[in-house]
Amino acid sequence: MGTGKDEKNATQVVPLSPDQIMDLFYHASTRELMDMGNLACCQVHGRDILLRGLIEFTNVCTNDCLYCGIRNSNHKANRYRMEASMILKALQTGYDRGIRTFVLQGGEDPVYTIDRICGLVRQIKDLGKKDAAVTLSCGIRSREAYFKLAQAGADRYLLRFETADPKLHFLLRNIGLNDRLKALEDIRAAGFQVGSGYMVGLPGETRETRLENILLCQRLELDMVGLGPFIPHPDTPLKHSFQHPLEHTLRSVALVRLALPKAHIPATTAAGSLMPDGREQMIAAGANVLMPNLTQDKFKQKYLLYPGKICLNEKGIQDIESLNQRIRPLNRNLSFARGDALYHLTNMDTGEPK
Ligand code: SAM
Ligand code: SF4
View 1 (cartoon, rainbow, N blue to C red):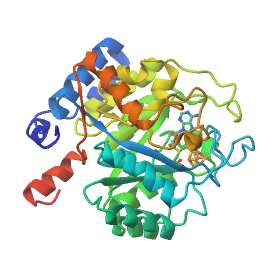
View 2: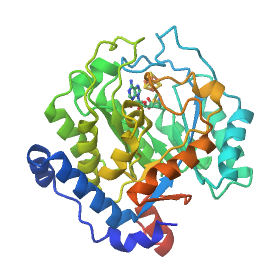
View 3: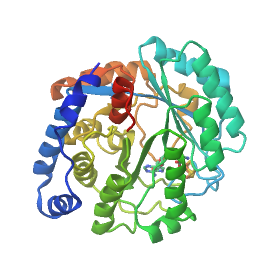
View 4: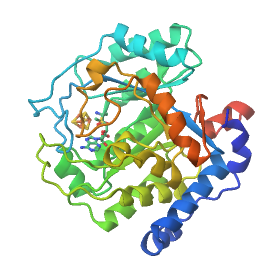
């Protein structure tokens, strides 16, 4: 366990102010930023890399985000929807291996109604897995729906804001940024630990957007921040977009770490898909989470958000073994702890409100 013990240290790492972040954003080298991000991460989270088991339970989506390989208008996407029994099977494999956090991610699939997802969450919790945390990532839902999901026992919710530029957001998603931010407010109000984040290198993004993305994460006081490179998918309208180097993502990770020292930040699959050692580089810049993919092969090969996605032919469990090897040179250890938001740990430890 590498979480509770770090709370003492966590209070000693003061988040940088927006002015300090801005100064570093424009003037620090990537090496300097990564060293600072890595140091802050180790001071707060120790040497543990938390594991979250990912299950991609449906690739059906009614939305049409221009960047996404499973968008509704991509008729080449081979659609699937996992039955509850398959989801529970994938989860059991991870649970048996010691994983205690599961992320259920999917498109905005009308067949996966809120009542159905609530039923699934209850099944997970009733199957003797009350000690496992359930994170949901299934898009924008109504305020009432988020409350129902929390009441069913879900612990966390992930909803990236994708880009802090309102015009770009609308252009790419045909939905206002404010709607996304309102959903994040509802998610917080429902009692979830809240995750959000963005893609780095979207077409139309400027340097200022990249800075604003970091500052928005800080203003939202996120418990978890998911960020990764945008990778153009050949069957989307953004297929000819420029692929930005991983360096922009690494600079962002380091600055988000300095802006939100306590946040949990995954070293994302997209980074590993862009560069063979992309996830390791993200850890070296301040990330502290890895997400082995527990989805059965026949499904995960169809959850193609972007090309070149790694680990498609590896079982999630094999992936854990290889992750263990990969993080050793970084002097890190895999942790099977639930890895709750650090403020949440304080609440549970002391009974005090946040
Ligand atoms: N449908 C939910 C949503 O949009 O919040 C959850 C699933 S969605 C596929 C998960 C994330 O994939 C999105 O938040 C987005 O940042 C990321 N994503 C989609 N297309 C991508 C691409 N081409 N490159 C990198 N990341 C991508
Ligand atoms: Fe659907 Fe999410 Fe893809 Fe947008 S990013 S099309 S909401 S799965």
